Image (cartoon, rainbow, N blue to C red):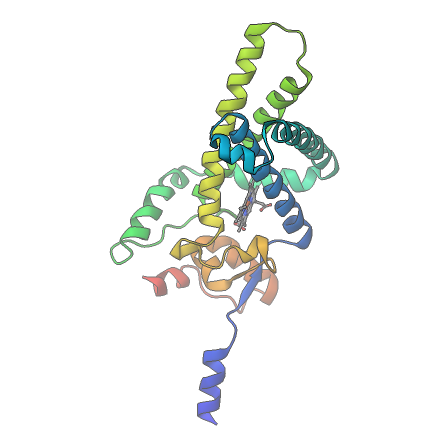
Length: 247
Ligand code: HEM
């Protein structure tokens, strides 16, 4: 009896929390696919992938047509999303631009914890996203509209002179590099390669859920709020309990 109970305990699935709904996951996947294709085709057009890389993608003419058509569709899709889902976009922006003074110290404290977990505790914050995630999202939020607007300008090429054209090309290239840097950092965290983020990928490319343990560590206040709404205020762990046991 007791051995079967302990076997049950060891095989029991970890508690999970709902993080993202189906619609958010589908939109995220479509957005990620479009951004990755636009970045790859843009790099090919700028000769960063070499002749063989460009040939692999179908050759310069095909890549150019793909980049322009998908780029235009991407801008239109985002304009529609902003018009149709203003409250969801507003919530995302509020969660991303939610910064307290201590949050700016979070990324360095996280790196200390990550590389020397025995000597440092996981830093706390009260956001739905951790402060490093928020900084990366701000980079995405700045880069994408600049890329989209400058791309639309290059597509339409209004007769505003060569100086304007050169400036817009510069903006398009600079915002593309900012986007590449932010997407790389985002994929590093979102893919779950980091010890602290293991399993996070299922939040967007799986069932939309994350383990309670990871949520307690990465987003302690959010995890607590979820537990309150799920179980009521009496059954939740006391504040800081997860962090103490992790130390
Ligand atoms: C293809 C590789 C990608 C992976 C593995 C990935 C993974 C993830 C994961 C796991 C989350 C959930 C994070 C959390 O709940 O805290 C997420 C959220 C998000 N990702 Fe990605 N992502 C990828 C590409 C992108 C791209 C290319 C963009 C935009 C340019 C992007 C923008 C976002 C945004 C804005 C969110 C927050 C969504 C929300 O909470 O409403 N992702 N991603």
